[in-house]
Image (tube, rainbow, N blue to C red; front, side, top):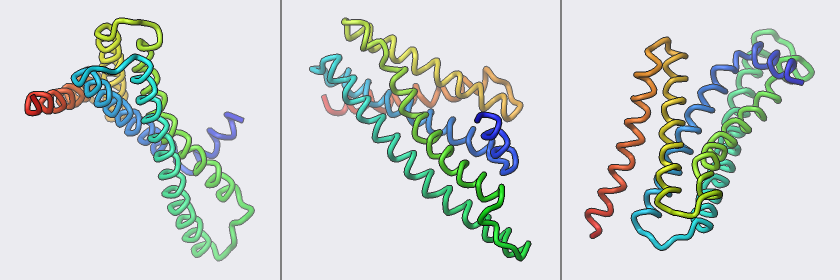
Length: 190
């Protein structure tokens, strides 16, 4: 099965797209979860269970959005590519390996696009499942989020053949800026 997936990915040159979707949507999942956590922390009055439910609900919404959006977008793009190839080859490609590979890659893209933000959201809130002190939960969760941002940035650095640490720090800075903006809401709201 994985061999076929790798083969389909290779003949359609889809690895770059899958990697991009994974990183972008993981990044979105991390920042969205940071937003929920910081918002809950500064407003207070939420139990661990409520925070877990809100983050998972948000992650599930991002899953549906990411899966559906990628599925529809990739379907349109792949159908266009098949039609252009049919035009050039003057041959219907309904039963071709390219058609089969396109169908598989459409589904795989949707899965990657949907699962990545949900997965990172659950990883980030894991401390809320095992700890009771909310301040500790918050600090551990933000630490996990920061580690994920460093890793995602490092992946981008590796892809672009840039300094991995610098790329990780750039992504981390974006997370810190997001927290700063959210904290400004508290400042202006009293």
